[in-house]
Amino acid sequence: MKLGVLQFFSWPERRVDLATVYARALQRIEIMDRTGYDAVWLAEHHFSSFSVCPSVHMVGTLAAARTKRLRIGTAVSLAPFYHPLRLAEEVALLDLLSGGRANWGAGRGFARVEFAAFGVPPDESTSRFHETVEIVLKAWTDEKLSFAGQHFRFEDVEVLPKPAQRPHPPVWMAASSEGAIDWAARHGFSILMDPHSSGPEIGAKRRHYTAKLAAAGFSETGRDIPIARLVAIADKAGKAAEVARSGAEWILNSYLGARHRPVMQGSFTPAGVDPIRRYLDEVILHGTPDKVGDEILRLREEIGLDYLLCAPLSHQTFMLLTEKVLPRLS
Image (cartoon, rainbow, N blue to C red; front, side, top):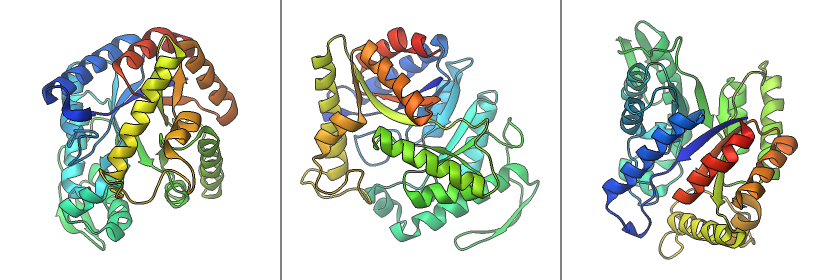
């Protein structure tokens, strides 16, 4: 089983200097490089202390400079908010400077404040996302790019640099909804699976993806399908539960806003279900190292989990994950 880390840059209650948030993340990344993790995947968000990383490509370059073997992933580049040629250039540059270690994950975003501030109508998010992905891939593979679409038009543009990996870095699409999964499968894209669904929900989504992929003439064989899970680990189960609850409250407050006004499109929680209880009972992996390790192995058997993308909810969780859980999965 491959193990990666979904690295958020959360700044809860702004308790420390923001520079400390970045310094701690980079320290973790250096540890990942030494201890057998497959990749770090950097989360992009804007205009919120939920995760203060507006440029995963800039931070990815810094991470690459501090590591030798760790792959550097974006989870995700929020494609609708970029000019597609600039996005193609930035990811290609990251791939070159990292020595061909970039993983490109792309998504369309969900935070209302991001769409409003960037002036992107939410009802255009899907079409802009699809068009941007198409342009980026063509920019990496075509000597001269010509394109005519709904949002962008180019004629004979040479996009430089080209990526180190040929024909391009491995590509994943963030896919939570059935529609997103269907689109990714129809085009043969691998997918990144979200940290907000329960284990059974993730299993059902993956089976749906596999079926749709086969129907489109593609195979899942040989693909890495990272499944993100929020994780809280402590020496005592009660302490881990406290960390999990605190993490769930932080996530929900970030998504719902100060007065529970939605700041995202859609919802990760079914109607009529207490979201905190759902995160604790069905979503977050929490407990002692042995319990969490057992849960991961159970998910491997039940839903075919072969690439776990952990989102640690504390530094202690990251260290216990590295020292006590990672050896069981290697």
